[in-house]
Image (cartoon, rainbow, N blue to C red):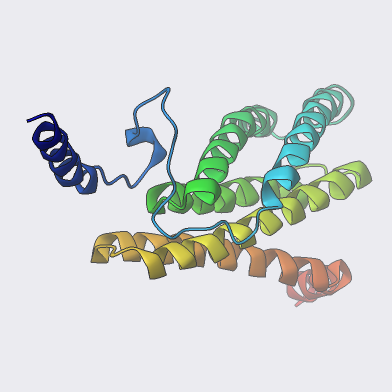
Length: 218
């Protein structure tokens, strides 16, 4: 009878286990070991250490962004409302980065499709916000260009790792068409923002100035 009871418990556990399918770390019970997607392996295991170092770099350059923003507001003239807009955008960067690191860590470790898609989407949004300060803010100083270029490159590296892992997830799991479209859209966002950054960096600034000068003199 004891053996029969153990067999019935094992059969019940076998029936329950397949039902516990998770698409995001947010649906997993807290305080328990988190299991990755079946057959999933992080193709870029070094990205965990890279992101750890990147977090400290984010703290440093965000602090410099606040310091330079206060300095520019004191020493330079801003159009009406421009300084408040730029300060508000700087204040949005820390929560964006924290969410990006959270979903990036668990997404790359567990291979959950929603986590990886959220990570890639946040990578693209953070890059777009940094693009503004790198190319379009009211006053772009040489120090801005130096650390913002490194910041965008670091996000691009992490985004590439996320793309490799989400493609593996799409291969291993049976995603619905909506989940597949979400994953492909997230990949497209990162590739599109990375392409814009490369084009803007490779195209000399003088060509933009000459083109603008020709337009205003015609």
